[in-house]
Image (cartoon, rainbow, N blue to C red; front, side, top):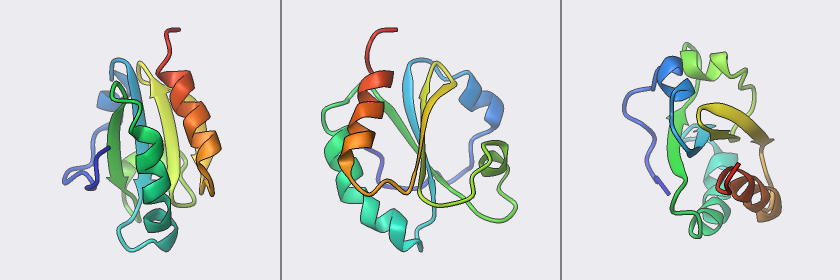
Length: 108
């Protein structure tokens, strides 16, 4: 799991071309909901070493978040080969996170 927000926001074209399973996490360092989700997210990610994790700081003027229609933080977008498979908004427990990770981390 990546604990840091990306220093440079990735381009949407680059995200759409990512191979394999990837978790895009949209949020902000100052967001209480985002900070509260970190231990659960880390626990779920611990058994999915194949899954890439990109933390994207979202906010006004951030194009990637707008391209995904992000409204609330954290929003977790689970991708397989650059295609959105599952989206979770402000998950409160690990069950849906674990299910989404299993979906993108299993053979198609």
